[in-house]
Length: 177
Image (cartoon, rainbow, N blue to C red):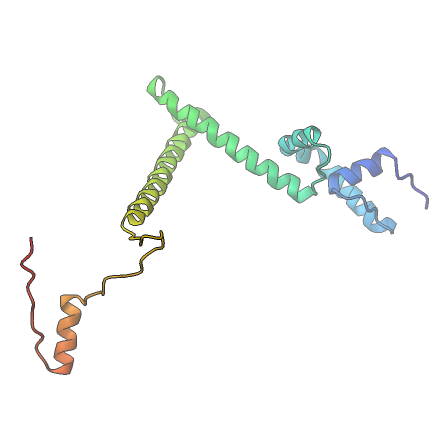
């Protein structure tokens, strides 16, 4: 069977599956075409962001899965941003119960809480790193001095060790204020 490599169906096949290699046998080609024609409309609607990106950068040739993944991430980010904007509208208007607007406001509030929590977490980590870096000592050549203070056992651990070894440790009180 002879088929035209430049036919609309062959070009659509190469675009849909993100490949330049065409099948050698009619059976896989037929069933892949059948699947492609069955899902091309919903697939194209879901993949609009990725398709627009392909038009802006024609050198990209993503596969079907890559196109779906990229588009899914873009849709999730867009819906998250939209819901965060809807949550800001709570200052002026509350949507009726069991409506899409109310659902977006609630989702937006949850996303704002997550964003603030992540910001606080990262800010705290940064502050701790900066504080611990300020406690590091350096010699006159700028090399780090490794002189860690020896760790002392807690009272409970010291008591257990003393009981096991049957001795009573001496307490040295520090009178420096």
